[in-house]
Image (cartoon, rainbow, N blue to C red):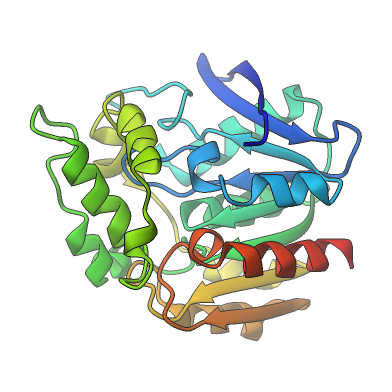
Length: 274
């Protein structure tokens, strides 16, 4: 397992954002932005990708978003896309990152987009896996995966079995037997510390009307069987972005970087190296 260096930064609002890092500190920075869901964190979402990018010479940076991982988890607030973006950007700048490639899955993809729109000088290339925030928030609620994620998260009866069910929902049934107990336990430990507000008070805008403003090279990867963010949304990037390429994987769900780790690593590193 690749050793991770750890740091925590106090950002605006008095929140703490935790950052893990691997690879060459002098290498080009690649920031991995994780998605939402009970127990999510930077390390757990990208465990199968860290070593490959580090070995390719990159400085691998894995922030835990506000409300997730080892970062602050405030209650009684709306978890807006702007809040996620502002707090992680503040932490990254304190971490000494002035420019980076952004790799984002689901909510993390939406954060990568807004961060690029707000701070275009910060972003280099974007690798997006089933990025969210490119449709109205309510349209995601009709997706079958969202219905399957209804659970007793945040309650006293939330347990490891329920955590495993939630993680398994993120992947294609063919891959579900590969969901390890270690991953489930890692995410369960985080989920037990999260307030329900992390999910029930999440507020995300539709950024699709602004995609044409992004002139960075973009690589979009999607699972054809994604039940959370429809693969058809890849066309939004093809239609509106000036420099984009896409790959769709069959028999793959919402976690391309996990379900297709070796292929994802090879494709993404080649794109960043180009």
